[in-house]
Image (cartoon, rainbow, N blue to C red; front, top):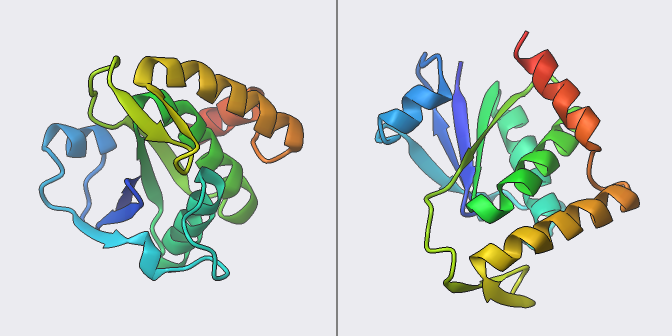
Length: 158
């Protein structure tokens, strides 16, 4: 079963019979080949936000026949990135098995630019910003509820 990693606007595909995403992480993912998602535009839209990137990613792995995907994002954004991928997968490719792994931990006190350049703050402060975004996007209907995501994980692991 092919496995793909998503992170840093790149889709990385592995086409062997590895059983576990954890095994790939432990092995440093040295056997993976990366493909920029920009080469696969979604309805002509650039990668402007997590929802658009997730739509591009899910469509791409569906079209490639990839059955498992490891969603990788900065630790402060990991929950929302995974929830967004699950939201899109449930609509477009419900049989896809999504897994979650935070990207490399970087200093929490360092100030970074986030949200298409509209937010600049220390990484630790962005945790709260992400929780606010989760609530906002759930109210808008753009993000699945926590119970829906947990049910997806339960079904995936059966």
